[in-house]
Image 1 (cartoon, helix red, strand yellow):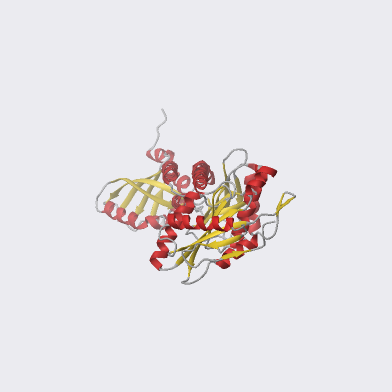
Image 2 (cartoon, one colour):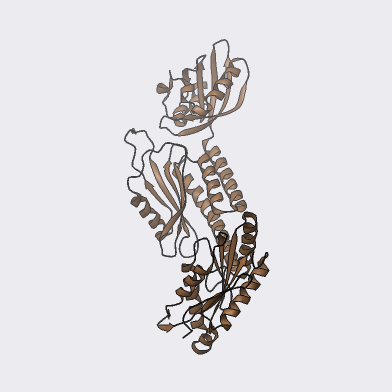
Length: 456
């Protein structure tokens, strides 16, 4: 039977046996050292092990070495080293001090794959938890960015969503803390990559130009884009910019990003559904204007603000003259087109701070805030009447229609929203009974009519 020497056993071990002196200078390493650390035994002798330790782990490693040299037996100590090729490797050490020879004997077990798997699982769990707890898309993407930055050596994380026109727009774009190897010279190149991911519905990995100062051992950097799955066409793209192979394989980063994508897609669709339901509850589906419920809320807030700031506000109640005739003669579809046109003209007539709402049917209201003491709302009413002076073009059908406008002021005509709305409604009926196409200020103040040409 062939005898196997102790040296043969050491040479066959998958773990690396290392012997260093009191200054942590390598005296001997087994052949497995090259597989784990990238240095041949001949290259390793004379190196200082501390020089290979990841800077973030060096202090803890030096403290652990001191305890071993004081007589403690080291059985479970983990730290990270930088391989000869620049990649990181996770090591589990066992070590003891040989006082008679003044040497430290240690065995290095490579646990890189195990640590990456653990990190992947922890990252996936953190992202999944963030997705379920996210209150908004920006909050979720900010959280995902921080989670990814802690586990993947990447310079930036961005998200782009598709638009109804077939393009896309970025909704999140953040860079990590690592220095960029080289900024992209042309945004168009990255834009084309986004488009390619959208069109193909598959992940895309693109190498980035190497920095001018890089050497042959500098690991390459990549742009990685992953589609957000949603029906026949992706909802958007998740992208990592400046992805490096120094910390982990690109394949692992791609697998992680492909796990993230459905989580983000789920939150996006949930938020979009919530926004649609919210809009349906507060906005008129025909005109897109605030509906009765939302208008009452805004009026209540406006009244409280006017009371607090001691300012005026005006409420204009607008009803279309002879609108029923449009529905009866041209049909409800044409009536709907007219209401949409009316909403558009009213919005064009008011200030950005004013509120235009549709209460229902052909009834609209306009809330004018921040009026100074003694300032009249009549110029705005006249502007609205003028907005109806031109006929409406309804898909080739020309139609003229004018409004009757009733006006109520806070605080002259009421201290509460219900009273103001009632007074404006009453004033509108006075304007209508007077022939329409005019405004009428409620006579709580000296009233006056302001009209245009008779309805034609």
